[in-house]
Length: 125
Image 1 (cartoon, rainbow, N blue to C red):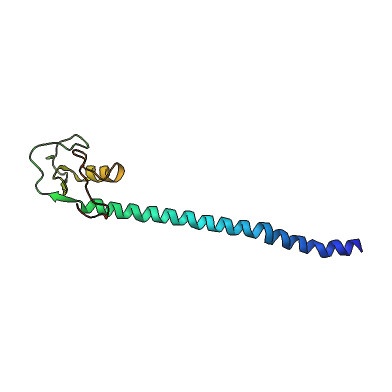
Image 2: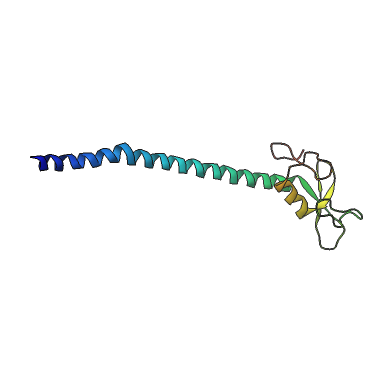
C-alpha cells in the first residue's frame, strides 16, 4: 500500500514543483529578457535618431574656410580633400567627421561656444 501511495504522489510532486517553482521562474525570466531587449531596442533607435539629427544640424561648406583650424582635432580646415561643415546654430566651422564624432560622443553643443547644436526634438535650432 505504501508503494502505491508513493507512485501516486510522485507525479503530483512533479506537477506541483513544475507549476509552483519552474513555470513561474521561467515566466519571470522570459519577462525580464523581453524588458532587456526592449530597453536595448529603445537605446538603438534613440542613437540612430540622434545620429540623424546630428547630420541635419550642420551644413556643408564649399569651399572650406580660408583660415582657421578645427577646434576638435586642431588641424587646418583648408586642407585638401577634407570636407568641412558649419553648425547651423552658431556658424562655427569644423571638419565634418570631427564635429559628428563630437556631437555623438560628447554633447549636442558646439565645441567652441557650447551653443545648442539642436533642440530636443532633434531638429535644427
